[in-house]
Image (cartoon, rainbow, N blue to C red; front, side, top):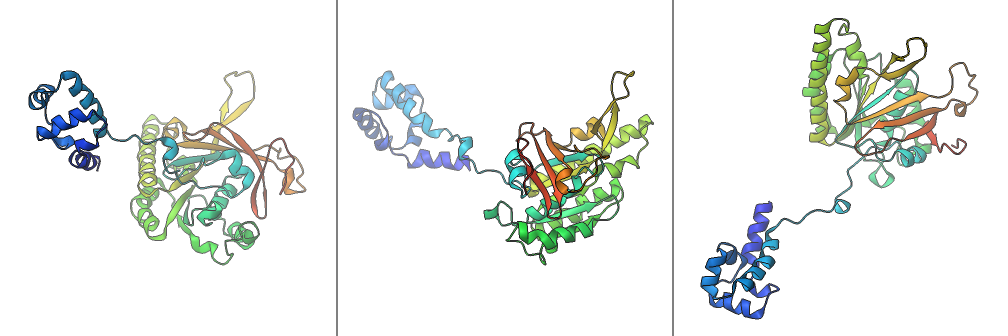
Amino acid sequence: KQTTKTASVMTETRVGGLDINPRTISALEQAGLHTVQDIVVLSRVELEQHTNLSLTAIDHLLQVVYPLLLPKCAIASHLPKPASVLFGDDALDRQLGDVIRCGTVVDLCGESSAGKTQLSLQLCLAVQRPKEEGGLGASAAFISSEGRFPAKRWQQLGSLCSSRFPSLRSDHVSDGLLLDHVDSPQALWATLNRSLPAVISACGVRLVVIDSIAALFRGEFAMDEKGEAAERSSVLFTIGARLKEIAAQHNVAIVCINQVSDDVALNTISTSSMKIPALGLAWTTCVNTRLIVRRLTGRDVQIKNPEDCVRQLAVVFSPFCAPTRARFYVTDVGCVGFDMTDQPVS
């Protein structure tokens, strides 16, 4: 396309329209050089011979002509903003921005009951909102690998969604969610290569959730054997590359729910430990963005109201968003965020 534009400039731009000395224009036309194309095919010496112009005049002419042939540079601020899947909550979206970009793979990790599935279900609702309300007017695909899909919680969110998302109808939100189940890396690979691309194209899917990626690998490979560890890494790289390929080709956001493991502190005298994402460095290189969910309220604390159980969603790394964090709690209508300096508000 750029070659075609350049050729068009060369043939359509007349010398009379150039910002040069009128004498130079007259000399060019008398020499039969009427367009930019007629000029650029000649060397400086040939131009001098044809026009009897001085080399100084020819240099000035070429300084005007050559920039016309260069491609115009796009300014980042003028480029269209990439589509993102928002959470549908003002506080969360304000603090985290468009961290879940379409065309990328996102790792959403955290401990059990931290709120990973709650956040992913809310994304599946929010993506269905019209574009003018911050959604994408699209469907979502949810691929389960651990147990059954949380149908009761989804039905609860769907029945109450109109109070939070007025444009969504409770009896239609399930039509915008496509379900599948896999029980092994091989089954996931088959889905990624057969059914998923077709479903994305046919049903207008812009969000894919895999819950969870870690469950497929933890029981499949024995990590205490070097051979199986290497094989697991190889399979992870292959699946990760395919996920990125699907995300880029179909411009969808793929959210992979991940688990965490205990990482014993280097100080062996201490009994303290910290949580790190499962699947190790191999999986880390397969994702574009990593988010981690933590439950800040201790499990021994008595919970009387949803606001009493505070959770935190943090950006560990992302090419689009600086490391940041947002706090939220889970209610019947979904995840509700609040500013860290303020009290929770619904």
